[in-house]
Length: 63
Image (tube, rainbow, N blue to C red):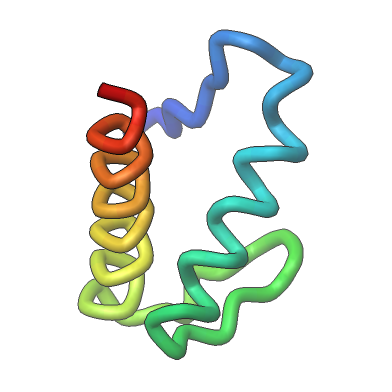
């Protein structure tokens, strides 16, 4: 299985990493810099879900 972790705008990587760390903190998941393969699926899913929730909230505020 290949890993598809591409960001369309390379300059955005730092901002996305910061965003991910903030989302993880909000849901109580301890992310480390680099490899986080020891997370459970539930933990990883809660981080992704929180990121999506925050993106939707941001979009709705911009309407």
